[in-house]
Each structure stands twice: as C-alpha cells, then as structure tokens.
Image 1: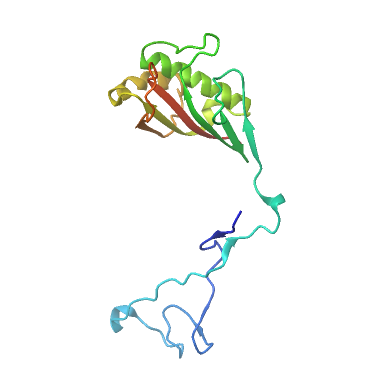
Image 2: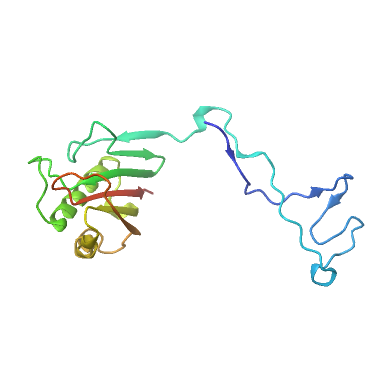
Length: 188
C-alpha cells in the first residue's frame, strides 16, 4: 500500500528562506513585523511538504480486515456481506429477502425494509456490533416516491439515535426488488 500523502497533524515548522534564514509569518527577513493590512501585502500561502503524513515501515502495523459472513442473512457469491476493519463494520447492500423462505419478505417497501434491516442486524451481530452502532445508513430504492414510507420502519429499528441516512435509486432492475440497505457501524 503506498504511503498516504498530504499534510500532517504535527505543529507548524519554521520555514527557511532561500538564504537559509528562518522566516515566520508576519515578519520580514530582518525580523521586523509586517502587517498586511497596512503594507498591502498578502499573507504567504501555507507550504506543503512532499512527505507522507504516515509511513508504515512494515505491513504488521496496517489495520486488519476481516470478512464477516452469516447464514442468517442472504449471501451473494459476488461480494462479502460485510467487512470489519478495526472497529468499523461496512455492511454491503442488503435486500429484503427472508432466508427461511428464499423470497422477498413481501410486496411492499415497508415489508422489504423491515426484512432488510433484520438482515443487516444479523450481519452486524456476526461482526460483534448492533444496529445501535450504525453511524451511516444508505438506502437504495427502486422507486424514489417510496422514501416517505420508510420513516415508520426506521423508527422501529432506531428508536433512540437515528443515524444519518441517504437515499439513492437502485441501479439494478430486478423484478420484485424494492429496497436495499447498506450501512457503516462503529463499535467501542
């Protein structure tokens, strides 16, 4: 994995002038104070180094990733149900299929949403998390007009703290599929 580039959280360093003298913001090379309001000068832009903010010398320091799988939620041969990286769980788009019957939970978006959230709950539990640990929920709908009907269902599953949520349109046209829910959860 290439090192991450960009700024760092370290305190600002003194910048050296071309002559090797330390230059501080608000001072000229002689050390006299410069007030940009009176001199008409602009303040100097921040300087960025080409050094990585973090550099891992060996792969042992990298965050471990664990594939999460459970038979209590629909499985796909194309992707993992979830991946746990550190204390964060990323749940893939989960549809409202009841694993006991193998079919959709019902013909309405509310029924499929309930089942989809139950499936997400099963996946999160397999990863050692709960629905209450969710920090982001991404809802994908076949019909955008169904978005208003989901409020009641989400209140059942998230009675206290409602995580941020976004709604998009499903890109796959599958007969009977009305909703898919993906989420991110963080455990303590």
